[in-house]
Length: 552
Image 1: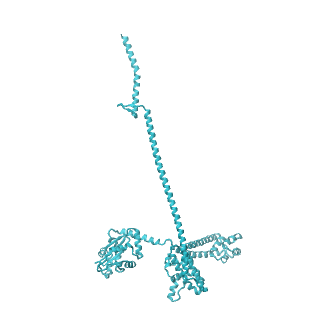
Image 2: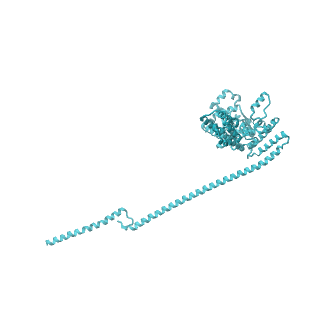
Image 3: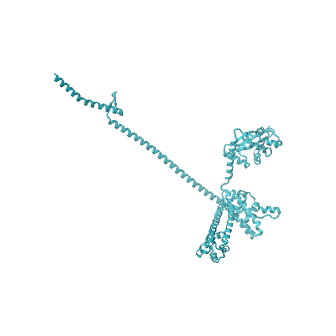
């Protein structure tokens, strides 16, 4: 008697396998586990009860997505209800590999579910010999189905939430941090290298990018004159410092430098300047991307700090799932675990320390404001993650709340209630969302009109082409008809011009052929010959008559 049925999810479809009555303790023995590798021994224990193939690749993807999320799909529910035996003394038990899916099946279909242990061993054997258990399924077809479904499943996971691509934010903030380190290192190298020639410039100019621009502009300090004072003022934006640079170049203690070394310093300083310009462009890109993906978080805590929080959490969704206590110490994990290990004081803040709020608070209020700020950051990240229309209304309101809390710590002024602030934010956000939807609808209407115009233009062009082809065909037919008419008229004229001739049967032949023409010419030539022969005969006859008369 079959006591256990096992559900196996394959790329080709669902399979329900019936397991013969066996001892659970015996199934876990090493000898029995080795016999799973043998098809003959395994098929004696496991028998295919029912198989539900997926009708299409889209259906397979939907079912596998539901299985991975622990949701019972309609196809799976129908398959189990129709094929799993019900009734009898002993209730049928269903073995499932995933505990989450088993819990969902037990809740929805009221089956007794078993996971792990014997079921895991049986599914291992089924996975190995599945193509031999199902009739008509080859190993090659099974592998192709698995490969195709694996590609589509991975592609669907990658394409999830395309519009809010927080991966770009993670990459750009990592590149921004790396560029800061590299620009700092290269600028120090330019300072050290050019400092041999013009050491006084280091004390006058502190900014790295300005120093590299001046090193590129000045070059040899001995060639620096008052004509270059205006160009130096454009870089430094300070006339007093420009005059100080000019005076220092005249009385500098630096060593002389060769033209080749100067060329190398200038080329390296141009590279550093280009890197600093690219960093500014990257920061603008990050600002625009944060405005698209997480506008409320960017409005509350800033673009860079918000991007660092998203990068550290792994994604905006992960950040939205974190509680406020985790967001507060995000980035200070080492200090936290060290404090727990040594039983010391835990850290009060992590990455959110770089925001302006904690720096403005007093030392005794830094912990309180960091806790409050982390709470508002979690609210902003959840709004950004799960809202349909992206607006920065909630971020601005939350920022105002943090400002009010700071003033409360300093002056004691009571801030507004959170409920009132959120009501105002919801009202403003609804207005903004309506405007955004209206703009989107206008854009869609314009796109539809353009497409309609383009389709109409294409249809009219095709109609004109069809008319032209029809006209060409009709003109061609007329030309051919005219040609035939001309040929017939020419033939008639020729027939009229030629004289009617009698055939041997006495029938008039209106259209004689070439042979007939030749015969007629020969016939006409014969009487001429007879006419030429007649005078000689007459002469002979006259001679005979004269000879006869003389004889007489």
